[in-house]
Image (cartoon, rainbow, N blue to C red; front, side):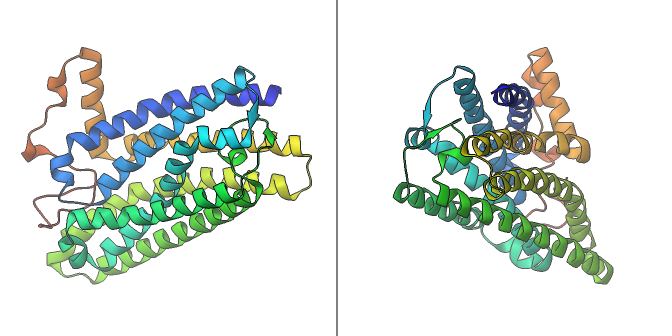
Length: 316
């Protein structure tokens, strides 16, 4: 029981940093929205920040229930956190989508830039919704009402769905890493063989990849640890109560995953850092003038304008 209380303390502490960071990422995305509409990946990162924010809020709710000693049953827990489960799986799939976005941007730069923005973003939303909807239906079909130690995503799923969920997430993590490695290799090769007219485009892609690579490694690292803990706890023959405790403690690396992107961009991206500093000054001085930027000075947090390889630059 002490482990569960310690886990709750970590959830609140890490979550506080995560809420601050994700709010800043969301505000930065909104501020640069006119320029982001000419690009792709920056908006996907903003959507990811919204998902992370929602996940942290629901984990705080779960930690509160744990501290208050609320008795939990799987069916009622599943419906109580169903919005969280939906957003969580959508968010996990979005990292794979962003990896595909990088490969597309580097391997087919002309098609990437001319594809209509609204169509592209709509297509990017489809995989997450399909995966999440499938898990949701499977959970309803296989649902039971067993008592559980805590109300969180691993325990909210029926055992069969939990196993499918864990294995599929681990597969997606592996595919995401492979796609990013492919993007890095192709980018290196194309920068060496490129024509002068394309040099600025691929330099901007390289700049974006330097930050995104850290984001992906951190994401897959924390997410991989979380799901490996959940999977192995069920495989090594622990008692049901011990498995539930391990699955609850595994929320800690998940919370790090929800909270880390802001701090990575603050560390790695000059453009993001400038936006975050402006926002912090506005907060400290309660003055929005620090957050006002002219369209000519907007530096988006995506990759490249759909219409230009020079003037409407973006980067990380």
